[in-house]
Amino acid sequence: MCICIHETNIMRKNISHYLMGGKEMKKRLLSVLLASGMVATTLVGCSVGGSGNKKVGVAMPTKDLQRWNQDGANMEKLLKEAGYDVDLQYASNDINTQVTQIENMITSGCDVLVIASIDGDSLGTVLEQAKQKKIPVIAYDRLIMNSDAVSYYATFNNELVGTKQGQYIEDQLGLKEGKGPYNLEIFTGDPGDNNARFFYKGAMDVLNPYIDNGQLVVPSGQIDFDTVATAAWASDAAQARMEAIISSNYADGTQLDAVMCSNDSTAFGVANALVNYTGSYPIITGQDCDIANVKNMIAGKQSMSIFKDTRTLAKKTVEMVDAILKGGTAPTNDTSTYDNGVKVVPSYLCEPVFADVNNYKELLIDSGYYTEDQLK
Ligand code: BGC
Image (cartoon, rainbow, N blue to C red; front, side, top):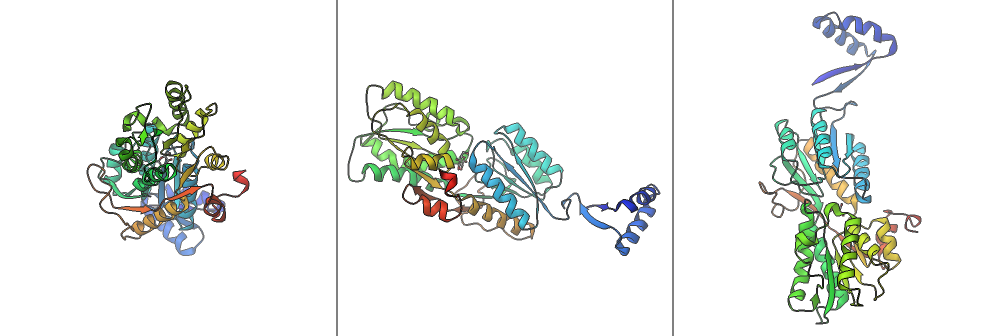
């Protein structure tokens, strides 16, 4: 551990003079100053932040999507309230930038890393350095794959997110009652994000039996994960794919009944692609309750979204950080689901909830997540 002296202006000259005078002089000066209380001393360096606090590195994927801004801000606030210094970084969805940011966090003395990865498979090498320095790593929201350096995972129940989206379509179309056939299209997320596979699986486990028995038809034929994935979860990419699907399969007046979108950014792109669509408006699912999407819900352009209260996830993650830094064991409630390829990562899964036009006020406004004005 290194020690740094924050001295007053009056003392600075004398101190530099003495510091040049060899180790013994430094030691004596230090003890005199400490004993006299004439300077403020602050421990910095290897394991303690500039303010004397332990430091937490928080690596977020991008500022482009509303949720990560909220996640980062909530975490920074709660960590600071808990007395930690925070190094919060966003990587513009660029994998190399995120790797460099994490490297810097490691070399600058962060005590714990909280990482929402851009690509779950790309952090193995940099996290080897964390492991060597015994820096615990919490995978935040997205699992980090193929690395034994990951200590914990804090997330929402990802498969349940997909299940709820699938069940919404099942309920709205009356599939359990045998209704159909209905036309469905499918949009999921980035293939490098392990969550996307869980969302897809949760939804498709509900919808596949109806595709198999003909109650649901996918006119584009685009069903398997790789075909319906959306690189970087980009709205533009989802919009372009939906536009192509409409012109090839629905331009003749074929009715589109439902679009299973794994999240709000893909749902936003799909809604944009439907501006000139003249059939009756399809069911569109989403996730995150981003402001633009809640506005779309109110305007009837998106049917539902899954609400993952980022305050809850940030709070749980800070509890984990706190437990680790106090030498304890972080709270977990799932020790079997999230195998990252080399280990099953002990996880805490928060509960996602379903939001639509009927309950958004209670969920989002009454809880203080948004103000009414933000949704106008
Ligand atoms: C998150 C979603 C988010 C998506 C795109 C996923 O890993 O779980 O909440 O919509 O990434 O950022």
